Length: 469
Image (cartoon, rainbow, N blue to C red; front, side, top):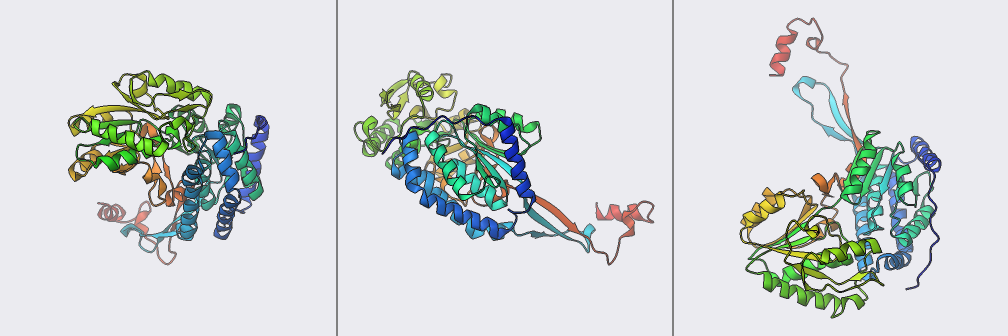
């Protein structure tokens, strides 16, 4: 693919950012975004625009992360089409005011809940899936009737540039805007009086976002990360588990927030599982993964150095080779690691995969629960009892039984973390709910009135005690 050189993006001044926010708030207050017909048209326009830009998007993803066309379409583009199609199909139903029952104390009244947009929302996207994780929440923001400012990651400049070009072609900046830039621009954005903040990224930066939001009591969704375990019990289908684990761990060179972070395998099947994973890796990426055209690269040198240090924390039983000139690192399985080593202290976010063993499923529950709640958990077993033990006794954002990653690919399931792995969820109807405030309304009758509700009413307290006992 052709390589392009991009000019550095100048940082936006705080004044420029505040002016944009003010213009978006004015546009929202003029009621432009409220009608369902308008929202549907904008979502259709977004899908059409992505289709027109497909090859540019694929090329930009290759330049920034060396993603293959297959991976780019599957994980960044196709998943967005599914999200938009699902939203278009159900939006009218989601946006409809919902009647609710009233209690005995409210005879004669009618209650309803009305979803309304927050207003102007800020979406801060990460670099690992820079297109999909910027536009997927945007689908929800548009569907709910908001205006939106999208801040892409400066670490993936080619896709950031394409996203700016695409969205500025589709929408006026007063409605949907992209603001490129680095840390300073992000700080300016976080200081603004926006109505909602949606952030995807690391736990550390997520804390800074939440701190900034707290100054204005701005509601937030934080999609973070953590050390997501992959547990393989002794009764698992080893061949199938190996294929699905390798797929989940090494897609995008392991730079996936819900990638299996470490392998927790029953000691009796460790050797068989490792052998099966070696075979799968050879099938997926050949004898020399660093030269394979479909294998991704690490986003920058800083992350490359961080991952290279992790490899020293254990004994590589597969992989371990790396090429600094291309920022590529082989899929690496690490043996002889302990919980107190750096590789087991932080989210890895790369193609390094520590392997631990256990004897009893109780040991797994104890070990995982002793650490922050993970964003994802994957369990391979054919035992319903083991499945129930893990899902009932360990708290995590979401996950799969006998698979990896695939829970994120369906709009029927909400996606989000818990504890340190995140706050809030999205996808499908959950995206609409995230970017909507649900306004409660009670319509009271004028045909009669209950005098007992007022002060000094005769027998008022007696009646209220009977109603509210």
